[in-house]
Amino acid sequence: MQLGIVGKPNVGKSTFLNAATEAHAEIASYPFTTIDANRGVMYIRKPCPCKDFNVTCTPNNSECKNGTRFVPIEAIDVAGLVPDAHKGKGLGNKFLDDLRQAHALIHIVDASGGTDEEGNLCEIGTYDPLKDVEFLEKEIVYWLFGIIKKSWEKIAKQCELEDKKIERMLAEKLTGLGIKEEHIISAIRKVDIDRSKPSTWTDDDILKLSDYVRTISKPMIIAFNKCDKAPDNLMAKMDGLKEYIVVPTSAESELALNNAGKKGLIEYTPGSKDFNIVKKEEILEKQLKALDYINSQVLTKYGSTGVQRCIEEAVKMLELIVVYPVEDDNHLTDKDGRVLPDAHLIPRGSTAKDLAYKVHTDLGNHFIRAIDARTHRVIGSDHELKDGDVISIIADA
Image (cartoon, rainbow, N blue to C red; front, side):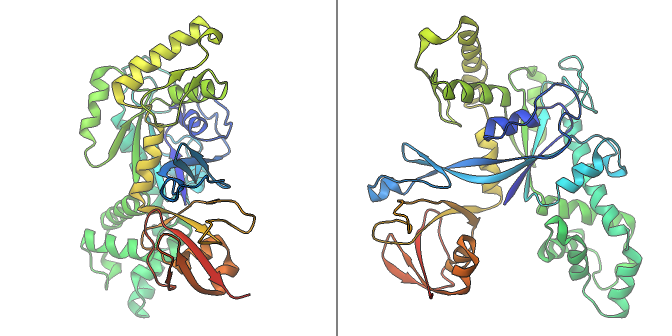
């Protein structure tokens, strides 16, 4: 699974990625700083089973802090998008190509109104952030529309003359974008067009289809970034985005808190509503003022910096659960003796055999059965897993 960090240039995408991951993307206040896609690993918070089992865990692919497991999910921060990107303007072609494999999008919007439509700096409060939401949707829709239209006459003719299913042909055409046949089926029903006669579909029909496919195949969270700098009238515009989950966000504040935490100056857990100063005597006066500012203008005002919440809302939107594979269901260890070593995000509805394949292809190919470590009951290959399950998989040699 991969989250795409998207938006026009200079809105804080790279800062968001840096704040949420260990990646070190370049940060600068001018358009197109990010040319090649930056990748990193973000984390969501989940209760660690170590508390339930009263054990000390030794995580491998994740981290446990006081019983909270930080579970990894891949993220990609792509080149900034500008109007008419689908026509190749700016770095549009690269943006759209990088976006192909993202399962959900976190759209970073400059809530302060301090960057124009192309990402150039302007006076705070002078640009309407809702325009960014509208144009990014439009660019992705027109991108999909262009891909479909490129060979539309041939596809429509084949469907009608050779009795092929239009939803299957479109899914094959769009499979490289992470779009599935069920997405196309749902979109055709929503738009209410005749699937048996695609040659009668108008450009408007295909645009509507593209829009709905975008909505269900690339669901989007809106991060209203720079919330601490945004005038009240612009922050109020969040109320006009009722069809989205909108999160007030300050990526700069999250990055500053994480850096202070790494230096041991404060105690801070990503997503928290507060922090504790540990070494006040080592903090410079300007740093104390910065921390006071973050506390009053971000944490107290909005409950968090919003970065962690954006990630976790995206994972909820994708309906992902966390499971913990172990080799020994009695000691909760892997072959190296590590306790509850790995945490994996998988789609809700996944089975024990799906988890086996997630861990290793050979484990899936030679699956015999699995054991629920909480109950020590044997479960079959088609057993549907639940969030927080600890599972031992047994396979033949």
